[in-house]
Length: 414
Image (cartoon, rainbow, N blue to C red; front, side, top):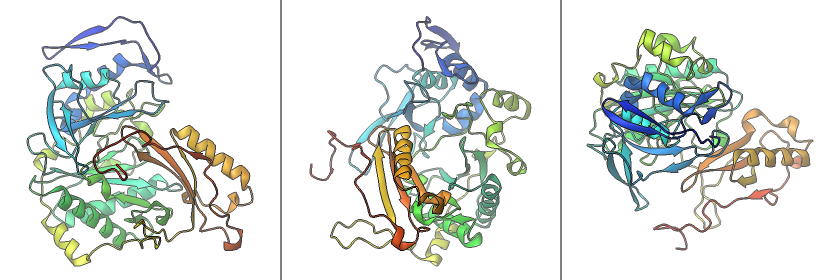
């Protein structure tokens, strides 16, 4: 967001006053959207956005320097929050805790946008019961080289599996390249059970659609397939909820769909400029989601039938680390994605003879969650390069340490 000296604007939203600082600050230069435009967008789709994020503790993903800079993740709610912002304290496996924001109305939506939040990142629990998720999240994440039709095919397989398990899936675009399927469940199972159920769903989708879908957690083993990302159901994970604005140049929106729309829809159809009109004309396709809660009994029974998922072998060096079955080399670790892509280009320039042999899914540029922001790891899978031509692991082109100078309970060496 570019600097601005525009006076603040005070909005009366449902009887609550919300201060919008620098309302004319440009957020999306392409479509010409300001901070106030984003506030008005969320007010126009408030019923749908609150259905996805309302009443849930959320991580504040803030973009103070605009969409071209890395955001930072703020778990702890600001101390100077208004009275209409509730809170809930979450406890993490690391031994830390955080009092997180809980929004319940349109004023809360405007308040988080004013902080520089674009997308909403709620946990899959209600503030009233923090240990029992009421939402299972299916994230269909395409590998490079996978087109939209393959994602759609996998989505329908996932719908079939959910139906066989007595569950209802509610699809939405992720706002990027993939699809999310949300499943309301009775809040009676632990995070561990919900994650196991999600992993079992992913394995069954892979069993029914081999080659199209994969449940393999390790990215280099997936090939050109759609990863059914079950780990989004881990306790510390959040995903962009319905009607969230994503940090892409066209101001794309994570948009709920009906199943009849999934095959013909395209993610780039749904933006801040188009979704309010759609919401006014057709309403929210997820309007009935809260009345469709099921249970995980059948999925957990299937987990027992399938047995434990295959585990990767461990390194023999005593570190206990996983040993990849693929010929991986690491290229760089960087603070930002542009730095990661520049390091990848430098590696390709050093090894021009290898580049033609690489498949799209062999180049792995991963955003990794740090303590409060993302960092990036660049790796190359040499599986399609003949053995004698494979270069050894070299010194990293960039070696950013996201943990430098940080301490927390249980950190190795602390």
